[in-house]
Amino acid sequence: MEALNRLMDIMDTLRGPGGCPWDMEQTHKSIMKCLIEETYELADAIESGDAEVLREELGDVFLQVVFHSAIAKDNGLFTLDEVIHELCDKLIYRHPHVFGDASVRDSDEVIKNWERLKRKENTKSARESILSGIPNDLPALLKALKIQSVVSRVGFDWEQPRDVLDKIKEEVREVEEAISSSDKDQMEAEIGDLIFSVVNLARRLKVDPEAALRRTNKKFSSRFYEIEKVAKTKGLRLSEMPMEEKDRIWEEAKKRV
Image 1 (tube, rainbow, N blue to C red):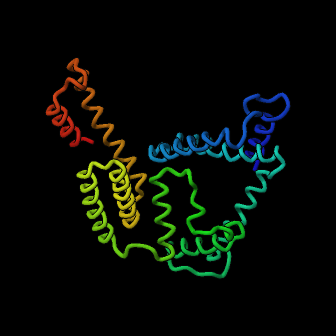
Image 2: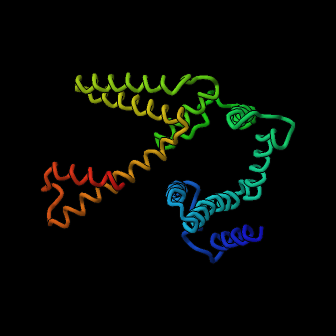
Image 3: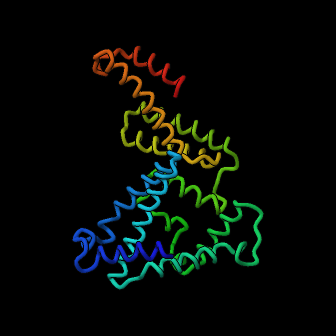
């Protein structure tokens, strides 16, 4: 609590009389982008495995929570203490198998109970759909995963991963048909269906599609960097390097990365 109180005092000083002009001007909306950016930087830190970087990025994300709470307090809405106490109450309520008499068989049942209890809470009861609570501004890949996860908890799901794989093959055929039609709108729609199905397969295999794609992005970048290095060594622009040589370097890089 000493560290938290110190941070809150610093934030009050920054936003108080004689404080920082920039901090005093900020609103929930003006710093919303900061929270998103800091969250992605935290994700990078987690993947790096560097504990010092992780510690720093966790602090940056936590700062955003404190900052938003300070803005809310100044507007007479709520305080950081209220945020924390509400969170504590929520954690206790949604873990009756730990703080109450309920029992669960495994983590899957924990998740189902969690969703059931969420729907019973007053703040959730007015929602007209179980999908209503999914943030509109989530990146499309993450939103697809969230949609699929939510509907699966009410039984709307494929029985086996193999079923999803068959669906992917079907979607590939539909993409091919869309390409043949030269209809750009249809191509966009069918590619969207294909990506959605791939996310579904990842979910059924308990693979995080965001982490999988980030891993592939990193792998691709590393291999492409090898092509750039060779081109630079030979004094060539990439556009001047024959595709056959690019492929050869790529295949060599695949053996290492």
